[in-house]
Image: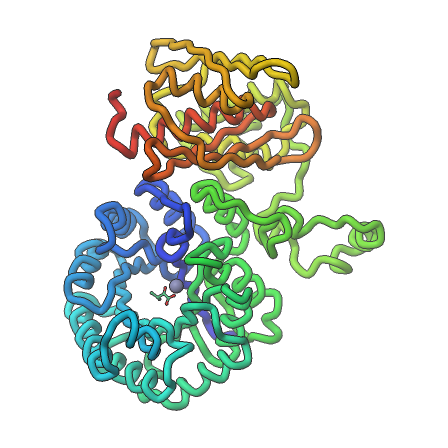
Length: 508
Ligand code: KIV
Ligand code: ZN
């Protein structure tokens, strides 16, 4: 029988530590719900001591998301652990995840603690966590650069103190696959009691080896893999979970393992995480990249047409990438729209469905063929949980190589319509300035990017941008349209709405 490998998702904790990523509570909840649908075993929902927002997010996820273990991270300190417990206690299956570094570099320079002090703190932390909950994970931070004898002593002591999962992080992405596999084997041989607990790995991608190291560890007997969707995370990121899962599945002949993941949910999860974090997925990214199943060379296309498996080792449908291209058009009705969304796995409430259908009709007037990717973009925009203060009513742009770009915007706030015009260095700049005049909030555009959702001249453009009010926190905005300036205006307004919401100024 296949050995079970547990999938521990840290998109909302380590993933959220990616530079420039900041998710609010509702966005985290939305991702957590999708992770539960994906079938991960553990959702690490956050690091509650670090901020009231993180605490709130963990608490909300613990209360709302069922059928999955919800973990909260804590340093090896009583204050952290107590706070983690408060945040996670309402979960159906709560876990406290406590950690302390065991490498000489970290102990000497960061912790300024001796080996004995670290060992003592680890044991005390695990005991404290166990006084609250029966599921306790202990991580030896920077394990892969630790002295193996000392690491084994710490792990053994943590298990004796009650840890039910011990995690071996390659915190700085330094390990190589063969070496890491040997390391895991040594730990399995040397640590008393290791067979009674789940042996986990947590690999970072500084050398691009996070997935390879995780898989090598599984070969060597690890039974939990930690990672993040799309591989996001601190610095170069964490092991990309979708890659780990698909490698374990596709090469089950090699690994002899199974996971509880519903692979058809992978693509949607990847898109949701990319959309809410504002971190694009590179086109050639394995499993979920736009080109992962695209065949450019004539020889390859010919091969795939004759027999898909000539050049495809995975079936795109298996990861939830729809094969159907032309789905709906201008004459399609609400019923067909709802049915196609259901086939794509979206269950929308009446209000959301109405709004999405309106957007669909607007798009269908501009674009003859509405593909599944277009539908996904529409629905994801509607599901974005930012309360609407302003909506873009209309936009007029005057631009060219010999004129000063000018934008006129009409924004609605409730039933009131506000109109302003402004000039700018370019049309996008002019739009931003005109919107600022309406809202009275001067913002700086920190980044702007566009992604074509589908191909062709009438493709939907998805603009993602970030703004800041006074050089502090950045706010993400997204907008879709077949017109990139309209998409930019929608994205900017969306970012302003988010700013107003997150700074508690909805009534302004
Ligand atoms: O990379 C790391 O060591 C971590 C630990 C907190 C598990 O993220
Ligand atoms: Zn990490």
